Image (tube, rainbow, N blue to C red; front, side, top):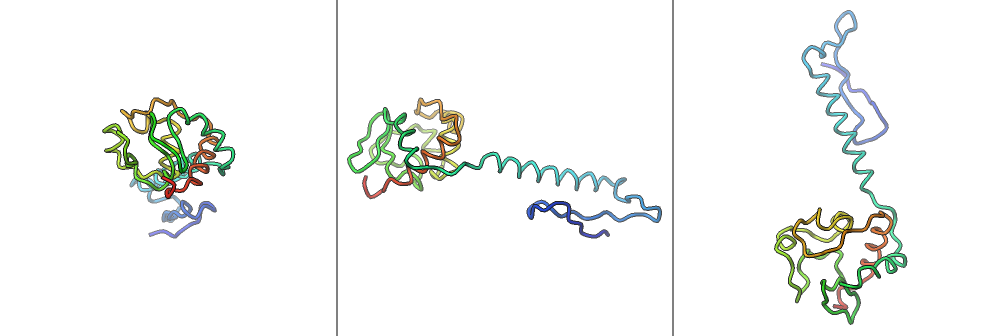
Amino acid sequence: MGEWRRLAPDPMFCWLIQPPLDPKGRDTMKKSGLAAGLLSAAAIGAAIAASHAQTSLPHGDSRAGAVVFERCMGCHQVGPDAEMGIGPVLTGVVGRAAAKAPGFSYSASLENAGLIWNEATLTDFLRAPSARVPGTKMPFAGLAKSQDIADVIAFLKTTDPRDQ
């Protein structure tokens, strides 16, 4: 058939088969469309890698996150004396299943979303809650800055679930 050829330094998307050549040095796979398929696969892989790079968060600062969290305090509380308000208590939310804080009435859409609050799901939700979970009761438009999101998540990670 052909031989393996390294195309890029990226270990995830770097190998393709060098197509076999006819006696005149022409690519014999062009007619079959396989070469186009391999190039399409490489393009898809590059697009996936690029989208992953765009969704990665900057490093979060929990102190800055405490300041950003002040915007949330009209509805949410954290800490050992936190009480339910318009929104649920967020103490220990990172790692918890969505819509599982005891004593709060969640929307059916959030209860049925099947989310676990981790960095990825919190990032998506905090950026645009209604887009991530249509029908959520949370009236917040979202945080526009990736750094603010990373900082809030870093802050929420510092809250101890035993303080609930």
